[in-house]
Amino acid sequence: MTTQAWASYDAAAVRARVAVRELSGVGELQEAAAVLGRIWGVPDNPPMSAELLRAMGKAESYVAGAYDADRPDGAMVGVCVGFHSTPAARTMHSHIAGVTPAVAGRHAGFALKLHQRAWCLDRGIELMEWTYDPLVSRNAYFNLAKLGARVAEYLPDFYGAMTDGINRHDESDRILVHWSLATPEVDAACAGTRVRAVVPSGAAASWVHVPRDIEALRLADPEQARGWRTKVRDQLLVALQAGGRVAGFDKEQGYLVLPYEGDACQ
Image (cartoon, rainbow, N blue to C red; front, side, top):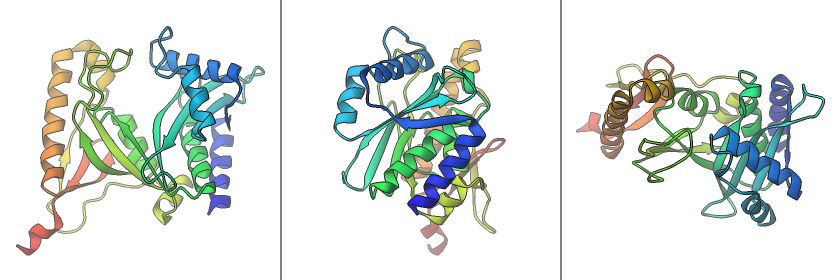
């Protein structure tokens, strides 16, 4: 499995024209902190400092950077950081991952996640989890359709008030996803097969729509953006608390929600 996982990473890296590797030196960790600061719009106060990245690397957590193979200077264009979760030997919590606009459209983020997956499988870690903003359509599609992760939990205002350039002035609702690294479905997704959101025959499914571009909407109409936050939170929370599950994400329709399967027997 690990050999196949590294092969999937290698193919993704070639397509994205990046090289991903672990970071350990002080200079490259300082560069990683600066890259994160630029991505999150807070260059003077990056979401993770070089000192913290250094400590996490020493604790054998995952700290990696993506480098642009198209540039002679091999500039760092992405960062991904994860740490061990419970149980420590089997689960990785991926805390932060991002790429710069310099590699937009090249699927560098996909290569980063596949490198992280292969790294985990090398160490016997078969489950990865992370959070993302449920209103960001491209992230929902990336996580659920492109990587084959699954929604585990809806977390209202998870981080509280945030001050970075991406999340400022909005509540920090998050979806927690689980990525089962060694399953055939995830293996196929990493090889390029998208996980489609398909309504099972005869199922009483529903769709939870999200705006196409919430970042632009926050700037153009903050009140409408806040309305979307409340609407999506209410719909997904009610469905999940009733035992339903999110069965996928479609770019046009949003989240595919299936009701609790036991309802059909009542």
